[in-house]
Length: 354
Image (tube, rainbow, N blue to C red; front, side, top):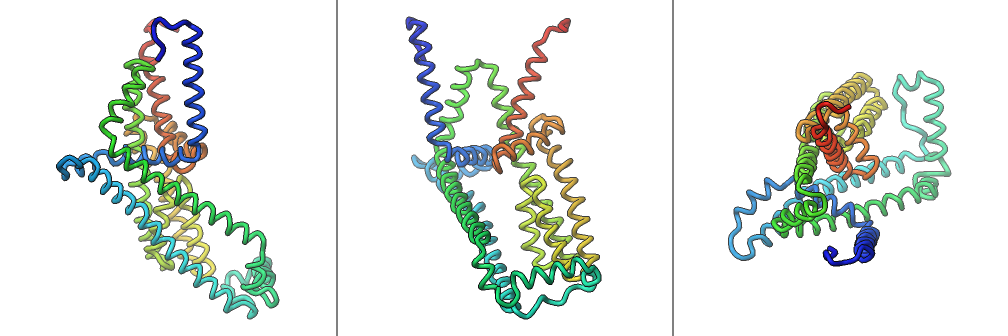
């Protein structure tokens, strides 16, 4: 910070230099900012659990061992379901590819009776089969040689590799956040207090509370959605109901993404001729997701962050659109900070003001 005897030009030059260094550092670390944000979110969400975990360690290296082991536990909780889901998805994809290869050249499989009664739909299915899986184009020919399929596979591979790298750096950053948590909990508020005054403490507490409420609202509600839909899949005799329920719960962490899963299940049941089961899955899924995304989740987040329903919902949707998946937690935190500023200004307004 500039000294008291520094000239005005020196103070301006120093502030310009500090701003340039901050912007340069942010630009240099722009690809690692999502990992750092995830580490902060996970550290805040698991702070109470980590406090109890820390009490189990003693000695000079207690902080290092506690941080290392707890980071390993968090990594296992995040990685194991992803690896299991990837293995199962790969197995299902291989099985589907074998079925397509075995049936290629033999014409489309028998269509459900209801589909055969719709001329334009049955004709489209048969034409699609002949074009992509019929004789001369086979499962090993046209599909693998299709540039769009090759490009899509390449894009998916790049995105998967990028997510793996982000997860690795997230866990690395999370370890150091746990390790230096005591110092960070003093230094970060101290820096903000020095820059903006003591009134910023309430704002920081509101942001932390909003992040913790967002994690609880999103994770717990997603688990509930997955459990309910798992029961619906069992009643509808859907294929792989447990796995599909888990996938539904994972997709439910993203607002309005779960319909992709139960919608696919409904289509599969419809193609198998189970019209009543397809209607059950579609209707039950729509009701569960609508209630969870529009009422339960915003209420949980809003009560924890002291946010009105509308601003909580806008914070979730706007955060996802602007920051990606981590925006689910950053969005409500930003909205909580803005609402806190608004309430602070309103409270400081004179009673006889306009």
